[in-house]
Structures are given as C-alpha cells and as structure tokens.
Image 1: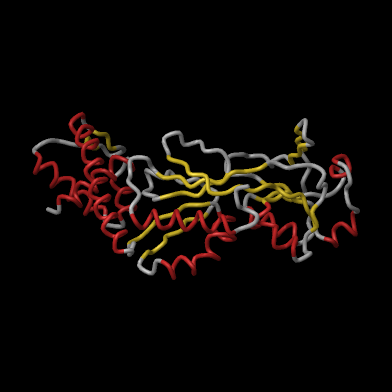
Image 2: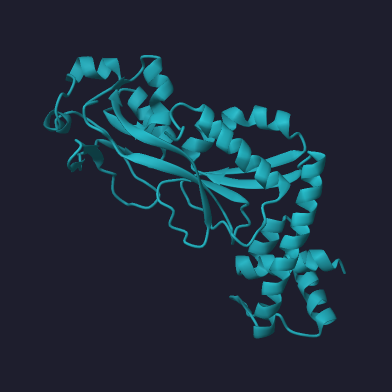
Length: 303
C-alpha cells in the first residue's frame, strides 16, 4: 500500500464527506479510494470512518488521525515546494474556481503568459455563477468578487472594481440620455440576478452622503455577466455592469457611461484558499501571477 496516497485519500474523504466526491477531486476511481482507506484501516488496526449508504462520518480515532495527518501532509508539501521553488520549476495541476466573467475576460486572456512562465503547470479552471465548496471539492484556490462569506478560508485581496451605468449610442439616440435617477427609471433596462439572489439586483448609486437603490422594472433579466454585457451591447436596455467587463466597449465607443456624477459601489476581489493547506509551488505561482495580472489591469488594480 502507498501510505502517502492512502493518507491523502483519507483526508479527501473527510473533507469531501463522501468517497465519490473524494475520488472525483483526486481524479481516481471510487474503488481506488475505497481500497486505500480499507488498507489504511487494516494496517492501523483501527476504524477511521463510519460508513452508511448515505453518509460517511469520522470516528473519534479517525478525527485524531486526521488532525495529525493533515499536518504531516502539509510538511511533506512544504518540503516538495521548497525544493521545486529552489529549482524554479513549479509543476502539476492547479484547480481554480472563479466567476464566468472574471474567467472569460481576465484569466483566460492572460493564460498564454502564465504558460510561458510555468510550462509544467496545468490549470483546471472552473467558471460559473455557482460558488464551489473549496475544501470539499478539492479546489486549490478560488477568485471571488464581493464579500468573503467563508469564515474559515484565507482571503488575499488582489483587486477591486466599480460598477458603470451605460448604454449604446443607438439606444440613447432612440430613448434619450437620462440625466437624473428619475429619468433612468423611465428608460428600458436590463436586470442581473446574482448567484445568491432570486431577484434582479437594484441599480446602486452614492452621492457622497447617502446611498440610493433603484429597483427597476426590466424586460430582460439574466444571471451571467457575459450575457448581461451582451444584452447592453445589443441595445436592449441600460445596464450597470462591472467596469472591467464594459471598459473595452466604452473605450471603443460601443457603450456610453451615464450619470457619472453619481458614484457606484466598489467591489473587492479576493483569492481564497484553505488555511490548513500549505501553498505548494504550483499554487503559489498561480496566485502570485494572478496578483500581477490584476495589477496590470486598469479596471481591476487596487487604488
């Protein structure tokens, strides 16, 4: 039995909660995880997990073993990371999770530079509006915009952006340019539903003293920033979108910013990772590269 592989499988089962999820995150067959855990229990002569058809729970002995094994695996990762860093050759797979817009508009366009620097690192980028459970799903790091709700995660701030209210020149020629918030209410608009809401987000403004939220009536509501910007570019209504998502279109004259005397909220971007895992050379390389990537982007740089 490969003791290190068995220990790693045990840790993943505990963190993922099921053998199937653990197998998925390890990219091995379910039977392999089962065999490793059984071999580990037989070798230790102690039951580490209680198994039922619906769930897996940790025995008291298993909980104690888990705490010590996590530290041991972190030590081993530390040793390997230090060695690889000294050689300057991070390698292996990095699993990253982020929102679709950041993945599509920021991360993917910069990946050629990352691969040039780290040719031996494979990036598995998961994009979407669903927030993955970083620990349970074996994600190495997650890039998130907005408040950090995971209390047990390490969060490193890497960027910030504001929202821009805008529309196409053709739309404004047809419907007129709103000069006040009341006039904005009278124009067609497009709504955005976030991953954590069932209603369209209000348009938010700040005049330096008080905040105003406009709950508008939309003829179209979408749940993805890419589609949201596409709707704005199609002239379907006024949108209030992240500056990094509409910045290129504004520079190209495809969208016109509106109501610029009003400030809009600033959203922070963080990279999250589990605190009980030492940052391996490959993960550290990706995070440091992401910090540089955001710093080079005028719409995402922390000011």
